[in-house]
Image (cartoon, rainbow, N blue to C red; front, side, top):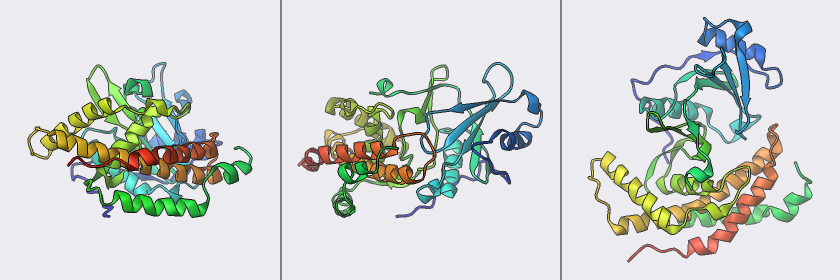
Length: 313
């Protein structure tokens, strides 16, 4: 599968600043970045606030004054995240989505992170869209052999579904969607997993994220009626964007429904493997091993029902 992302010519160039931030002593490094990006800010007046929602990286907001209006977001890459995140690809995705008015501006990159624009708006919650002992790894996480078998099954069963390959976000959890009520627009943030993928994977992954992150509840996975309504609206916009009109048939909706729900299994499988890697290397205070168990459990729970879905005749 091609992984080259074409960056539009009008996308602003992104400078690279030779600074490395120590996540345990971040202020001095962050001030060096701010000196380049906001030279008129007085270092003594720069305030810094950590945001706590991310579980891949650490995110720091830098601003002056009493109101967080002009905020420079400084993302410090998590330890060893380069094992599963293509950082060069992330920057290309950032620039491409910004050029299409779907993303904030990327100010710069530095040795172990990047800086970007703060978006005014509300990070959505699931309702808006409707380390532990090593013994857990042996008792609750599938064996390597089982995981290899499931990976082969997933690849064989999904590659024949005919889902088109498109530029995907691949991590559309609710808090990566920013809704600006005043401007009546939606934009997306965090593109480190963005790249070309199957259309149905991105949607299936988004539906899985209805369950939330810190208190995961898969009873919030969208029911069939909501999915069909969502998928019809998506297809209307997708076809109109591609110059194919906006008329959508029942068969098209049903086909996408089958594709999306089957690809939702791949989402569980991917994030389960991701969590196992994070459990080994991440310095972020999060129960990654427990999260891996959760995602693999949901994968095996949903597999019989989802695998039985067939295209309409």
